[in-house]
Image (tube, rainbow, N blue to C red; front, side):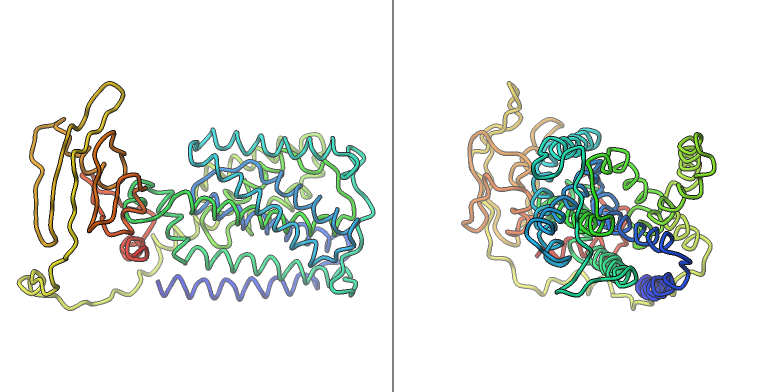
Length: 443
């Protein structure tokens, strides 16, 4: 853990140094603008990494959120006279609301189906931008976006670069802190095993909503920055191919890593510029290079480096722990729990099949009971029912007078009724300590 924290500190110091040196490295306005585009795309990728890298959800609608932020910021700037700060705040709020709405389908759909939903969102935003010509300018686009200014002070090219650098640095630092927080651990837990996460008290819907909001807000902020940088926006700027590119930034750099999305954004911002000499063959070469890298580096650039360091680098120093005698570890000095679990007449049906019929149980604190029966007798169904994974057709259960029937499994866990599984459920991407902390932090 200490090695991880130290490497992050070094990484952020190096990151800050690079951002400060960039203006001196840019020979002209074109190169400076390219650096600024990289930072805008980096903000999108860093936010998307929370959704893809931590929560394990695939979104192909980031271009739609990017467009929503761009048009929102541009409209309030042109029509209401908002400066960069005000326009960014409004765009963040609007895209955050749409992030909440986009998270609703995750209750029922996953994987490819969720990707289709996000694609549809991007298409809807693009068509609204085209059809609502009175507000967005339609296919002609929206021009006249003012020069970026903050509280009345006009920002020159280098000053605006400084704002973008602070925004990218702040977004990366914030997402790094999220990853190391209880929300980050809960996100990884949900992506690794939603059932185990629920049993430990993690609410998957809340976690996914939080992840969608983070990715939406960062895309909205980046969109506002883009509109002020470009002074002109149109629907054909925000296409499905941009959503794919934003996702590739995360995957190429290393999904779930701190600096991977930033590196992916840098590569996919500058690579097309480097391939301009190939003209007609640019897209083909671009695609082949990406496929080759993804097959060779499935963990992404940063993820592969971290894997090699863990495999071949110097092992972390071990922590010596004094052994506890067996008889001492088995002593129960804590007082017996006063809570009482009561299940009355539980019946569970799956269609026409009755898996559990009129089952009742009463367990007092400190007691040990066993459910004995052949396969198919309903033992697992009974445990799943009292822990909230199944809802009974008849009967009810309560813990110390608190009704459990009708509650979600994560809610029941937080009330005080937890369960284990016949097949061990672990979060493979976490350390032993983090596995334990996920359950403890919900209490």
